[in-house]
Image (cartoon, rainbow over all chains, first blue to last red):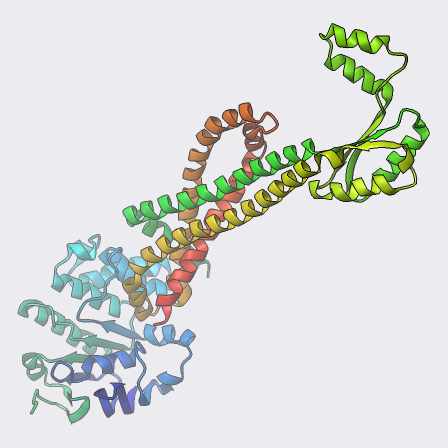
Length: 227
Length: 302
């Protein structure tokens, strides 16, 4: 489903974010990408949603080479991938409901579908009574749950989550992880980038470990082991 | 397509409302730009009228000797009328000239009595020539002085007033040209101020633009609401500008009229009320759309 082939990302001659990274993610897998800060986890996910371009290698999504896509085709790629970020990236001028509805509007869903699906997803993430609140009126955990709801409301085939629990307390962290597991069990592929040892060891799923931009371990099930 | 358009318009209108202060600031700056444009336009109308009034005051008169035949004078008149540079030629016969003279000096008994005591009419017939442009009098005067009827010409007052006419004609030319240049410069400055305000407003939304793109929105779906906001800014700014222009005209128009009775700004404004309103609003909308379009473009490259 997702394939990285010898992908490199070099920002300048002194710093390479990724070096010859190759791995594949199969449909409905739950893959964690682990590594210290600066190991290249975020860069990897940014390359997948074409927020950045690699300096070398090829990236395939459903057999299509992302690097050969025209700018006009990128929105169609991104609509198939639900992205969750450490800093939530919610639209500040839209309410929780509108933020989630935006993802559906973008893909051209009807008003009826939006009216039925958004409340359901808000219920799923436990924010039914916060639908009219703006992001500034929500706590960190609530914001991340809205972001997750937005990422999954249009039923993408993959959810990529870049340190989704980085800004959350332990209770909220586990709420988000439980939601990701649930989404995965319902058939959505999940790629989770994190440096949280506890989460990785508890998940008992596939782990791809990055160090200084290179894959040093790829095990299924894996554990958080960094040299 | 229709649903997307509806969503874009709704989103633009909602953003306009929710961005309260930012919208207010943008609208006010745009109002100033539109006021500058409308002000420049009206000043140009006034300047053009002043200059054309001034141009009409400049004419030359050709006087004919007392024994010149009227037929020859009229023949010359039609020749002059045939010149490309000439706008109007008016014939004043000796009799007319006397009448005008008497009327002008109605109260002056001594002068009138002395005129009556003369044997005949001492006043010469003349042609008053108004050129299309005051810089063309030299050419007209030399034509009059050199054609086949030149023998009946006794005097051309161009030669006497040459310096004054040339100076005036230069002033008119300089004022016309500098009026255009000043208008263009000020108009462009007003545009830059409004454009940069919109750029700053959109700069504050650059993060949002990136988020929308990462969620999978197409460029038009992101840019659309900003353009709708731009249209709303333009319409609101035009409304505010007009609210300021109306009392402004009411205040300045009569003052100007007292000073220059040929220029009735109030009448001109109300005669072209809808035209001015239409073009001002159009300018506001165009300014809003252009600025938003250009400003958002930079952040869409995600």
